[in-house]
Image 1 (spheres, rainbow, N blue to C red):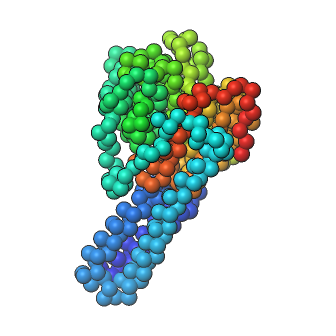
Image 2: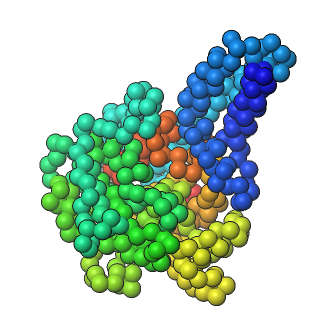
Image 3: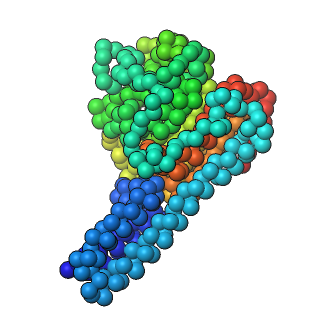
Length: 420
């Protein structure tokens, strides 16, 4: 019995490893494929250790008394070799991100960035943090919880602030918007490795909650995020932040919302009740974001449009195509966009990487400010939610991008758009 158990577990291990390298592209199975590949691709060493412990338990119980057990052991070794390759692949994110910054900002960006705010000489994650990837603590960072940015203390309109314990004044600010398909998620769950690191480097980071579907109907989500940016512009000085420099970031649905915040600054129709307040941002860093609700490039199946129409917009695309276009960042791209750094995983099972490529191409065709695009080999959706080798490289690169934008403020409007 133990022999067959070892064989079954080893087959599962090989399947998980193979899925991490090349996930199937079937829309109907994409959530399963994502969850199966997400942890394995970001935590290959932990996966090896877990499989080795199980094998070590089963062998003394007679797992090798039958040929099936030996076959299972061989498959385990094959899986471990593949998982070791994933470690190497994760490490390659560093050169990919460096090359993306070189291409988008020019080869002199290292000298032009504000080194006090950059990753220079400051490790993003030490070995202890990589061993315990879900432990989100940093003694250098102070957290201020549940600040109301609008209304009467409702959960959906609260934000958290991460700032240096030894804070002064005029720290640049990052607003982070969580993902969750516009229906789930919380400000305490995503973006933490990046915000903790930035706060330790001298930034003030703000992470916001917003109304969620199905109770909320688009554009409630975006309106709330813009309210939060307006609050930051007007109140963050009291928390040590510099209201003259506010960047925005987010992952997945949060990446979609961050991109729209950056591309729709000052549009009164999206600021009901707070028209005229400053909702502009100085940079945008969307991670694995959704940039198109209309599937104009044909990279999605029909399930996404059905979900968005039924749950978020609450209308059908065939009846209201203009509403789906208006909710798509691709339809708001313009020359006045702030600097962008778009980060996406090549193995993303939930948001096709082709969508990110198309969005970046559109930005680069019209934008006068830099557009950095980093497509990370082997990265799944939500890869930077916890600490990992790939997360550390991504956080360092984003920190350097923001330090560069902060030091330059903005490129002249006459500067040519970045090209790939």
